[in-house]
Image (cartoon, rainbow, N blue to C red):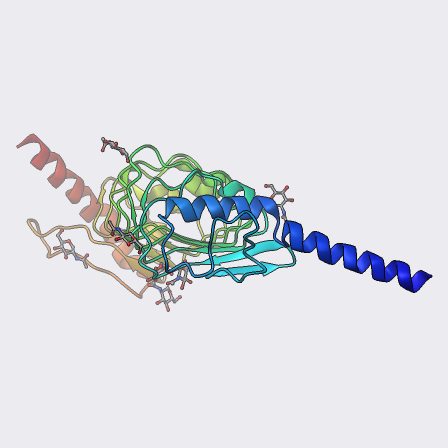
Length: 281
Ligand SMILES: *[C@@H]1O[C@H](CO)[C@@H](O)[C@H](O)[C@H]1NC(C)=O
Ligand SMILES: *[C@@H]1O[C@H](CO)[C@@H](O)[C@H](O)[C@H]1NC(C)=O
Ligand SMILES: *[C@@H]1O[C@H](CO)[C@@H](O)[C@H](O)[C@H]1NC(C)=O
Ligand SMILES: *[C@@H]1O[C@H](CO)[C@@H](O)[C@H](O)[C@H]1NC(C)=O
Ligand SMILES: *[C@@H]1O[C@H](CO)[C@@H](O)[C@H](O)[C@H]1NC(C)=O
Ligand SMILES: *[C@@H]1O[C@H](CO)[C@@H](O)[C@H](O)[C@H]1NC(C)=O
Ligand SMILES: *[C@@H]1O[C@H](CO)[C@@H](O)[C@H](O)[C@H]1NC(C)=O
């Protein structure tokens, strides 16, 4: 009798499985929305809008599951266009990796990314955010890569919610404004890439971070260059002194206390003066 019951139970579970699919319905709804807003591209093999469509069961391209949850979305280099859709990523509670880099996706970056993700890569797309960039806290996020897009906005003061961020790449955009104060909360940040943007102000908010790579060349920063930043092993900056005493300075791969003292006393100050002069002209 007990055996019969167990058997009945298994059959029932199997049938429920068939009818309702095995993937968490919230995860399915997010992927369906994304599929629509990406213009239902044929490259997304297996993806469909059928009501019984099931990403985990049917092995949708780029989707990895654990149990009934989507845990990874890996869609890099698939020539995808369109947008990311209705900003439903906050429903993807089990997604750890989101990589949609190297496509042609445009529009805004949703302010709610998968809340428990550790790795997010949206680089090499056409995201063209033009209002203040906001992002909900992501307490497990370690790697964030938004490089090579067309973000032309200031960064909101958002970084207090990212205690585990180790590496952030915002390079090759058109980001504006001063670096927000909450950068100071990124107490695990080891690598920061900000080159080729339009950031202004002084990089002094970065002074106490445990950085070992920092690239800030090709921006519009000015003012004080904190001496402590010269202790970063891999530092790239470019203070454009070409019209004054030096050729543009480019330092990399060396900590240099002496240079630091020198730069703090002269170069950045001169850079600042030079810009002020050219603004008056
Ligand atoms: C967008 O992608 C689809 C599917 O790959 C393609 O058929 C379409 O031509 C693309 N549209 C543009 C504007 O590139
Ligand atoms: C994921 O995030 C949600 C909401 O932000 C939270 O309730 C949940 O506990 C998190 N899950 C894990 C495994 O951390
Ligand atoms: C996406 O970025 C992460 C680091 O931010 C990197 O490790 C990964 O290789 C990148 N993905 C691709 C396809 O380059
Ligand atoms: C960001 O991702 C791009 C590829 O999409 C990669 O070339 C670059 O190295 C990544 N940045 C970091 C810091 O890993
Ligand atoms: C900002 O982006 C929206 C849509 O992406 C666009 O309609 C608007 O013209 C843009 N505004 C500016 C100032 O570029
Ligand atoms: C970051 O620093 C490491 C050494 O700590 C170096 O090997 C690596 O090339 C650097 N990465 C970039 C993108 O500059
Ligand atoms: C430094 O800046 C100058 C002038 O803005 C530019 O021509 C040069 O390519 C830059 N060098 C580096 C390594 O960023």
